[in-house]
Length: 392
Image (cartoon, rainbow, N blue to C red; front, side, top):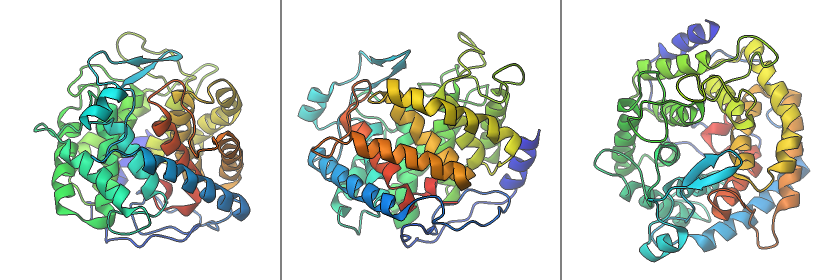
């Protein structure tokens, strides 16, 4: 029960509204959202990346941001296929609006838009300052204007995955700019996540779904933690219950001991304990709650280190690669040290080698190139540490 003991200590403190942060220089932490938890041994902040490599990554990310800027619609959104991973394929929802229709209607994919917005935030751009401030402002407006009466953030048929990314994006923007309009929308979005938590303590594809899976649950949990850290009210019980679900998803014996199941209830329960993205997401959830126990972290980090090459080789332009490494990068970042340095050097090298001549990264199976390019830009700009998810 170590996880819950540490978590309870973290949640004993009331959330405090963070001051408006000043963007940090590369290799230094800003003042925005930092994970709660016990103090850890200080490390030189620039020890985990090579400066020359970081400069090359920043330049590549800027080319990617320019490509994304050219794809942004006048409404502020970006397009993408609305669906979910199904085996090795990507299932497109029948009731969703396809990218061509999104372009015609000015709709866009809300989750992709939020991730694109975060890519620009990762470069130090805010709605009121930075070279690409207008891009961020338009993205913020798009997400805010697509808030439904229930609080759901949705466009073109997107569901709870996109709602979580939209909530996370608004939390990061509000934490840096304190826009009252954004705060109101953010509070409604957070309330929906809280209210729709199911009997297992988790979430699934749709709000108020009775089923639960670890991937969607961690996505909602991260949005809640980011919101709570910048002063938005989130009941402690909601986070405790979701963390209990994460803890219960851990494999307790056998060859996969220490890894995490995708589901522990309903069809497919106690299956797929060796999913790269699921294990990365679970470890990220623990770190965001202040849990840094080697016995919990080491099996997952070792698994991610071993599985990175097969994932990179087979899924290079697949949704699985981008989503999995989005969480793996956060997991390694929170752990720090030589493992982080090795992971980042390998990931950055692969991303630099796979960038297209026009600045984008390809996503053959998944929402589309806007999604993969935004993810690549977020990952390449890790050394800047502008995003709260890459601050300690």
